[in-house]
Image (cartoon, rainbow, N blue to C red; front, side):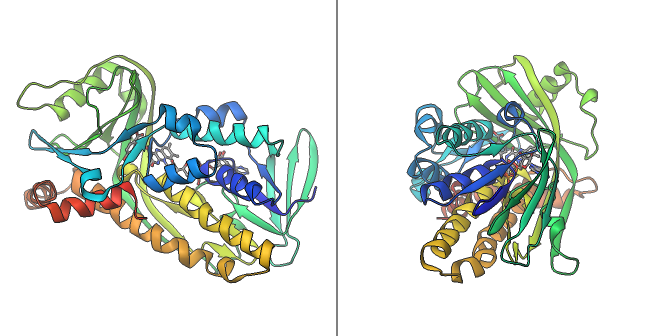
Length: 388
Ligand code: FAS
Ligand code: PHB
């Protein structure tokens, strides 16, 4: 097979890049190890920054997002039994939209296939060759056949556990990493959201997050030990713990309902630099990971490929290679801003094992400051809605 851009991975990064390239008349092939059904039902992120919404709408795949997405102009921080609203839109003029990552994936897959462009699902044994020559090759198996995809460049959009990053020779990449001494247990519940905006909650028992997917579906998270087994959390224990952590003086309670899905997500911060090597360009979780506390993961993936799409368009249209050469540096400025914000939110809101009472007092002071100082609240708001 021959194409201009070989894209590994059909997550938000790979699918959005393929779409942006198609709009510029640049051919690509998307390779995905999972089935279409699997990637369209994989429960992950839920919050789109203003910039991500604008990208989806402006590139023509935002119609259902505009119809079904829930626009939020504020976010809530809860601590010491008090709940405080940060009026994000009042402070920044921008908003977030709650719209599940799997819905973004469905919209991008539908756009790709209706344009008659290729996504090869359930590939296996993906290997990258010749990244340092003008015609790299992606070798893989598909429908029982060995295939070679010859292309001009390869986009590694295959997530943290993908193969792209490891195709870069030893000694080229530097990894910056932090793991946290806790994880998140997340549930999807058939329960109308008990609040109309998200609530990030610091409590003596640990962090809790109230989010949602639709007016009928709640998405809720609990801080748990890092190696927690989801089997240790039957539904009634989850609800009891959520109610305890989110309890307020006025007796407010979560609306409970059938737990449709539950899972444990590890918490880690990671950046690999540079995000490119010769004809390989890495994007999204393939090259950076953030703890979900800042709701940045999917948004960073989309921001990366917006830059990469524009750089490839300039290279093909005008032979310009300056934007491609600066791809990594351009993305890393936003990546490190999101890394810091995600680390800051995680450090402020979670109970760290071994935290002495002084640390907890510092957390509470910071929470009170960010919910009473317009200057500090604006800093949280502009990071949460996304830096333009
Ligand atoms: P993705 O991981 O989404 O996509 C990579 C794709 O490549 C996958 O479809 C994978 O199947 C495929 N692939 C892997 N290896 C391959 C290979 N060798 N060949 C071909 N294809 C291959 N972010 C938030 O903001 N909020 C959250 O609540 C949140 N929850 C998360 C929960 C979990 C369990 C995980 C793993 C991540 C979560 N994230 C969350 C982060 C997540 O949303 C990512 O940031 C987002 O999926 C990044 O998109 P991509 O970079 O496209 O990577
Ligand atoms: C979600 O709705 O899945 C969600 C929202 C905010 C976060 C993380 C996850 O910070």
